Amino acid sequence: MASGARLRRRHYSVLISLVLGVILPVLVVAGYLWFKATDQYASTVAFSVRTEEAGSPLESLIGIPGISGSSSSDTDILYEFLQSQKLVEDIDSAIDLRALWSKPEGDPIFTFDTDGTIEDLVKHWNRMVKIYYDDGAGLIEVRALAFTADDAQLIAQTLFEHSSEMINALSAIAREDAIRYARADLNEAVDRLKTAREAVTKFRNTHQLVDPSVDLATQAGLLGKLEAQLADALIEFDLLALSTRTDDPRVTQAQRRIEVIRDRIDAERRKLGLAGDGANGTEVYANLFGEYERLVVDREFAEKSYTTALASYDAAQAESRRQSRYLAPYVRPTLAESSRFPQRPMLLSLAALFIFLIWSTLVLVIYALKDRR
Image 1 (cartoon, rainbow, N blue to C red):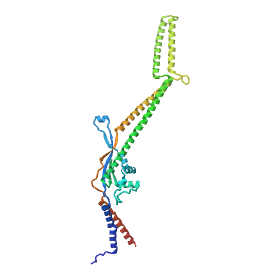
Image 2: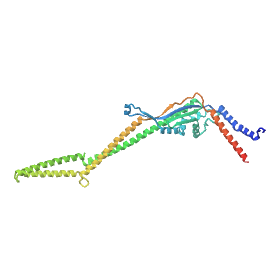
Image 3: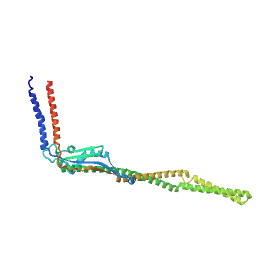
Image 4: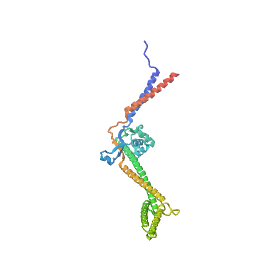
């Protein structure tokens, strides 16, 4: 029968290395976690960015309430802001994070060194403040750790207040941009309307015409009356020619009347074709009328542009008052009654696993090198 296997010197070496390289470090980690590490308390706050829009009067009349929705872009901005150095600096200035996270003595792992830089503080912030973001629902949950329950709640409350201020600042910037652009368009429309009206006034003063179309209608009416009088005079002349002698004074008077009316008609027709003093002494009335029509079209366009810009400005102001973007908390900062951190069993298990993996890897490498000799 084969004899039992006996332990050799290399086996004792492995056992000794197991004790020194695995068991002893694990015991040191366990001793630190249970006897040196300070208890930590957690405070949780959860919120989302909401936008309230008041409904129109028609919606209120038919019973449709205002719609409340979340803004994913604002939530993304807020998520990045919660991890920024600016927020850490602001909260540190407000409540002195360095002092809160350096309270315990003899705990170099979980406490903060007060001589650390702002970059060290941001790194420690990412360890002590965990942010969970549901981008689909637009919900953010934050868990803040501290060495007392009150400190943890204070950190969570201050974080929420600074986040709310940031969202309010974004909302104010958006409102001011909308109103500023609408105000600029309104000012431009006002200037255009003033210019158009001044051009019409200058045309009237230059040519002494309030409205060429009215003057044209007056001249046309006068010409029509003169043509009617000419027709009556011709009929009267024909009747006299048939009933009297050619040397009758009434025939001569009728001829003179006809000539006067024709001269007046010619003169009125010339007035319709020519009016006012131009650069060459005369200016065609049709050109004046065309220029006036162009000025009137410019004025009407400026008036419509002004009306549209004014309506847009009023709508922008009303919209800025109606819409409200704010931070809505659905979990207020909690106050812990017991310490749940650090999670000692989990940390010990992870430490033991990594220590064992490192030890086993070193043992395998050493034996592989021996086997190659």
